[in-house]
Figure 1 (cartoon, one colour):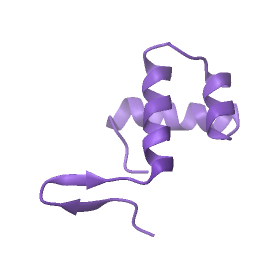
Figure 2: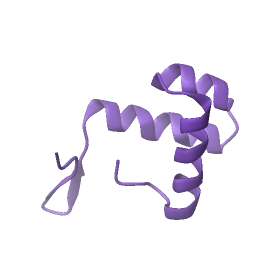
Figure 3: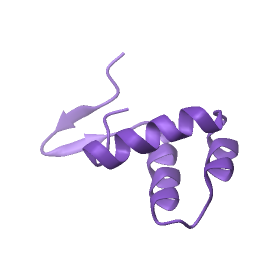
Length: 63
């Protein structure tokens, strides 16, 4: 399923994608820990580390 839809220069994201982006932003800014991010997203800390590496490499990822 395609998560992003380009409409007149805008990107539409699901609520889950918006939450993930917000939490990853907080993690990068060191407002929260990897453990807190994992709890908020319902993921393992290992998966959060993978997402963090992708976020840092690619900027705002296309999840």
